Length: 271
Image (cartoon, rainbow, N blue to C red; front, side):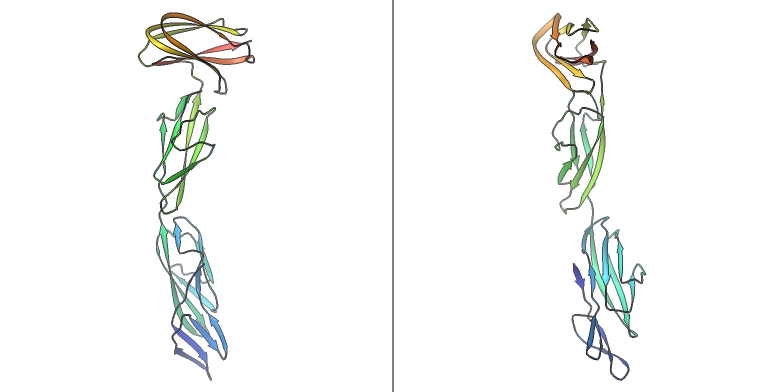
């Protein structure tokens, strides 16, 4: 609690209303031996932009706040900029004023850097989200700033950034997770054939590579979760690989083949 107390006029009842000047740390009125203080208090004088605070006064009969022109004993609001509030109080016909200064600190402007940049990935692919514009960052959904994670479904991710002045701000991004069935071609022409389809559990993969490449075989469910993974060696030309998926539940899956330059996905039904 911050208090601003004004030196100034004191009203005394000595055979009538007489205003005399007295030096003191409080703006006060005196009637006989009774004394009333007129402090001005603030919940805080150093605030972040958008923070709601309350300025309060007591002891007077009437109040006028500037620049708000409010006539209540307290005012509440979120100042848009730093400045000084002035209170004029009146008691028994005597008036005096007190000032209290507020400093409004800016919030950080938070942006999100995404990798991949379009915030859209194929199921099972990693995403990296990084906050920018603050000193520290706290994310929801259990993710860590600047650390890759694999989303299982389309979702919004929210970050709270804290600036060096301790003020905070927040922003969000939606990461879209797609079940990809097309070929993402980056220069290596690969043909993929999956059979039988539907399958009772054993799936054959036929590949035709024009360039030598290491192969990673994956199976992804419709929730985007990788339920099978097998690393192959360096291969070239036409190859056939059998995947034993008999331990998986019946349903729709996606065979994902990852080469050095391509990611290829084909849908398969286990029945």
